[in-house]
Structures are given as C-alpha cells and as structure tokens.
Image (cartoon, rainbow, N blue to C red):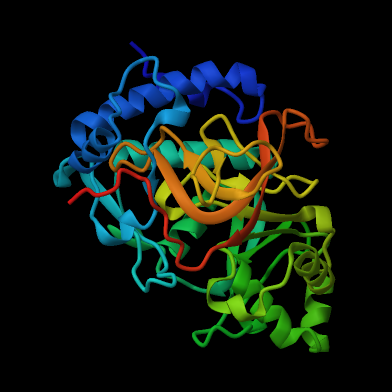
Length: 358
C-alpha cells in the first residue's frame, strides 16, 4: 500500500484548490502523526498532555504543535540513532542556542523532492549561481550548518556556482572567475545581501560589474538575524536590491522557511506573496489565546508538514508573526493559501503547548 505522504509528490505544488488539498493533506498528516506518536516519547507526552489521541479522523488544526524552541533544548528523534545520516544545526538566535535537526535517509529525500518541486515553479531552468557568501566546505559531511544546507538545496538548479566573499566576509570580485552575464541567479542571506549593498553602493567598479549581468533572479533567505538594527521594510529592501544588482523587482524572491522543517519552503511570487504548497499547511494563531485567526488577522505562524520522519517536527509554532492574505485567488495564479511574513518576535513566551516533555 502506497504511503499517503508519498502521494503528495505525485502532484504539482500549487495545482490544488484549498478544498481539493484538504482531504489529501489530512490523510498524509494523520499517517505522520500516528508514526511520531508511536516512535517519539517527547511527541507522545505532548499529545497525552493535550488529551490528543491520533485517529484517522483527526483534524489538522487539533494536532498538538511544538514550539520551535524545543529543538534548541532537546534532541528530538523518532528513529534510532543508527538511522541518522546527517545532523543540521541552525544559526543561533537571541537564545544563543542552535536548533539540532536529525535527518534519516527518508526525511532527507523527502525534503529534497519537496524543495525541487516547489522551486521548479519559480526557476524554470538551471541558472548560473553567484552565491553572496564565502566558499564553504560543501562536502557530504554528517554535520552541517543551516547556511550550508540552504546552498546545497539549490544544487539541482545550478548550471554553475561561484562565491564572491572573502574570508573576512567582504565582497571580492576577483574570486568570481568567469561568470556568464545571462541566465544568472544571485543568492544570499537577507542580512548579508544588505550588508554588501551598504558597503559597496557607492563603489563604481562594483556597480559596473553587476550592470553587466542581464536581469538576474535574486534569491534571499534567512531574515535579518545579525543585522536586525539596520532592518528595513520589504519595499525599501527590494528597491535597494533592484538598483544595486540591476534586476527587476518581480525577480526578487524572498524565501521563508525553517531549519526545523527543511524542504517545505515558501517563496515570494511576482505579487510578493508567499504560497503554501501541497507539502505543507500554515495557520495563524492569536498571540494571546493561541486560537486560530481568520484571514487578514496577524499572529504566530504555525507550520504543518508530514515530510519529517526522523524527528517530530510535523507541527511547529514559530515565534514569527504573519497573516494569511487569501485563499485560491492570488493574481499570480497559484492555488491554495498565501500569506505574508511580518516580523520575528523577540524572546516570545509561547505557552499552551502541552507543555512539558521532561
């Protein structure tokens, strides 16, 4: 019998209306919940504390969520340690503690397939990537930082790859080598791209270099993190990026996602909206009551996906604030929910999650 989760990969990521998606996605989530309830002591404790028993008819909204902070303080696994092939460490945030995510072969393959399926809807062909970062050790080691993991995720879309920062994280055009001037994608982390722009926007030789690249696609991920004091709004950021890298604003793709749910990413469409694919679901929860909010209301972003198998990260409550803008009616033509990320809360105190797993 084919897994309900695997059937998701037979579909195009944004081809189903929300109504068409609900039944298929619910079956996949119920399969995932039953697996983690049986295999993960921590997930089972949270479910039991919420008086939640996995059943085929369980509503997605009722599945207990885990605060993402749990992955910073607990090593959560749903498979034996012998099955782990890779460990991902997120960048430390205000807590100074990284999340630790354990991947088995099944989870790794699912995440890769989901990311490729999603990004094929935005990048129709392979591109020559210029990565705004220093050259990393991108071998196939068992322990990987989230920044390296993010770059690796785009390997299937790379015709070529060049890095442009030196060991001091400064722009060094001599490191680029022979970069084609067409069919290019400039990729970097949001805070790092903006840093490079601020440091070089009055440098004529740098500006002349990027003028030679014809209408590149810009992909940025990861938020502001180390540059929170210089954070600007989306419109101002896109204006700066458009001017510096000589690109159209509609070709700037901001990708939202979490290390704790790799693969199920949320890129901007040409309208600037983030779309929810067939591989995941989101809800917005009131910051005081944690009840689900209606369309147009802001709250904590909850991310739901059956993709993780090796760890119980299938229903996560983030400390990010966002709101759902609409369903099935984005002018870009993609179906399903679409939303906006608004901000990250500082030291959010998220309660009502079950709440202890000690």
